[in-house]
Every structure is written in C-alpha cells, then in structure tokens.
Image (cartoon, rainbow, N blue to C red; front, side, top):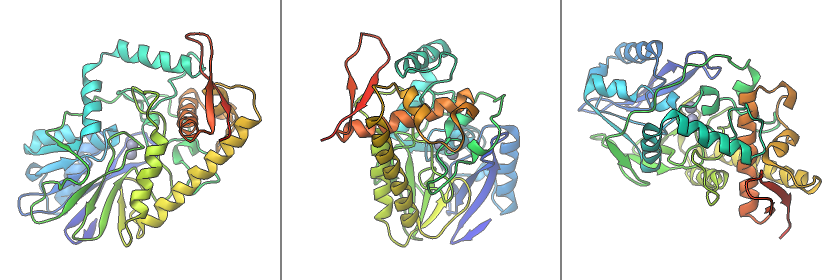
Length: 363
Ligand SMILES: [Zn+2]
Ligand SMILES: [Zn+2]
C-alpha cells in the first residue's frame, strides 16, 4: 500500500498465527529502499514480501538494508534472506544484537535447562514452556505482540488469546546476525531521509521505534499498536536487577512526548496519534499494577505462578493452555518486578533453591 511520502507497506503473513501478518515498511531512497522489519521466515511470507515489493515497483534485490525493530521472528525472521538476495545490511539495536549472539551461540539443551530453572523458581508447572518469552527459539505464541492472555478491560484485547492455541508450531531459526548495531538517537543509513533510532526497551531489551523525522511518522514495531498491547514478560536470560515493565512504561512516556506523530505499527493498522495511544497503554498497565498490589495484599506469600492464577485474564485460568499459562506467568513476573522496584512488593526469604515467594509491602 502506498502511504505517501515515499513510504509503502507490505503485509507479510505469519503462517498459522492469529496475529495474521507483519506490516513490512519500505522507505524509498535513491540507492534502494530500506525496509523496516522483514517478516516471518517462511516461503509464503517470502513470496508475499518479494511480490508485494514488486507490485509497487521495487525489486527486493535492490534493497539497501533492513532495520529490524526487535529480534522476534515475525520481525527479524526474513532479514537474512533479504540480505542474501540484495547484499544489503541488517541493522538492529545493540541490546537485541547481543541477545541474537547469545541465542545463536547457545545449544538447545542449555536453553532448555535455563528455562526449566526459571519455571521452577517461578513455582511453575513442570511441563509448561516457561514464564518468560523464551530464550531464542520461541514458539510464536510466546513471541509477541500477539497472544498475551490479558484481561479484557484494558485498551486492547490480545487476539491470540481469543483464538485457539495452535498445537503445532514450526520452531523458527535464530535471527540473522546484524551488520550494524544501533544506539538511541542514531540516524539509520537512508540517503535523503532522516530516520532516527528511538530506543524503546520493554517488549524486548533492544526494541526500537524509528522516527521518520522529515515526515512526522513513527514506525512503532510492537511497542505501540492500535488495538492490542504487546506481551511484556521478563527478558530472556533474566536478571533480578532488570525491570522490563518499568522499561516499557518509560518507553511509552518517550512516545507520549512526541506530539503530532503518525504511528506505523508492525501489526494491525496505521493510526494518526501515537502519543495518545501510548498514554492509553501506560494507563492500562498502571491500573493492572494497582490491582495486583491489592491482590497481593489479600493473599499469603505466593509464587509467580500462583499470582498469575489469581490475576484476571480474558479467559479463565483453566481454559488457558500451557503456553498461554507460561505467558501469563511471564506477565505476572514482570508486574511483580515493577512492584518490587517501587517498594510495593518484596520477596520472602526461603530455603535455598525453593521457588521464590512474594508478599505486598507498603512504603
Ligand atoms: Zn510482532
Ligand atoms: Zn515482538
């Protein structure tokens, strides 16, 4: 679709995923288009991207580069194939680049052991896929903007939670290693345009939005979407001193501080006011934090898994599949972490190696 001003969008299907498609954007330049995200690595997706570009007069072999908003497979998956065809570069934020190196360097057994330990410490069910959005070869339902089983009262319902849980996923290949690493404020190499990196950690540690400053447009990736909210869990290879939801809220504030900017998100549809939607999503999470604090105050010392069981989701706990329970636990863990950072929850001392238990505290 021609969005005007030298920007096109191509919907690239995500096979078998209720989210449907990733919107890949092409920004025209005299030395070939630069893509924002690339889509899922699947033959159908590849054909949709190649033919979608051809339909607007662009040859994928002339792509100058792909800037990836974050390392998830529905965004970074096809970047490697585009690079092979075009000889262009792949750029992403340095924090997600570091994660991609970890993912590419870690064997499956180590990943599984890491996940199992996280689930155990969360007090989780042994055969569940885990409270975090995975360590690298994520099943799509753990990935994304997509299938967080949030409560239905916020600004957005998660479509993945509304659909059936897929029983078979193709495990994605790890993302291609980038050629260029971006930091907050960097200009992306698009001749004749001003495309600025805005570091918006939260959904992943290195998520970026890209501000097309000469056009008043913001490519928001999964950070700000019009009808759904992105999954916010713990980061892969979690450490106790990081607060992904706290990062996300601060990143939303960055966008609320950008007036008169049109949002071009990676899923759903473009919308006129990025700042207003960012504020709405922020309020949704603040409400959820308040309710979680109340909930904790009325419970005995609980594990992350028990917290997740008690939180409101848009379906009952018993209707959530193991993968969705894992995502719910990831969201619970992220919200608990933020309450801890604000002095509103604390961990109780326990036996070494036992699941961690939390309780409410008041400042
Ligand atoms: Zn996504
Ligand atoms: Zn994502």
